[in-house]
Length: 85
Image 1: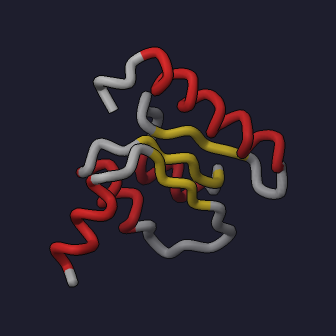
Image 2 (image 1 turned 180 degrees about the horizontal axis):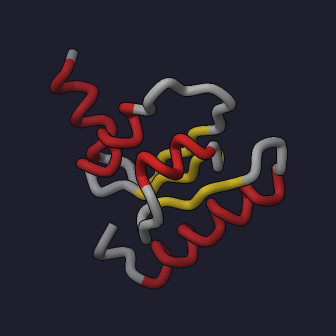
């Protein structure tokens, strides 16, 4: 099961996590390890845990437009450098 999970996230490019309450989002760490981009809610403890990075985009809770903008931002990066991802 563990190998299957690793294979699944390693074969992806982006993690989208809309959360209001996450004790510590281990899926974010797992996706960073797989070199995936992460779009996640801008909760203060998540920001303090992961800081600012090119690989993470923080979005405002309940702001669909912000979520879409995060996804589109990384879509453009991927589109311009498909070999990297």
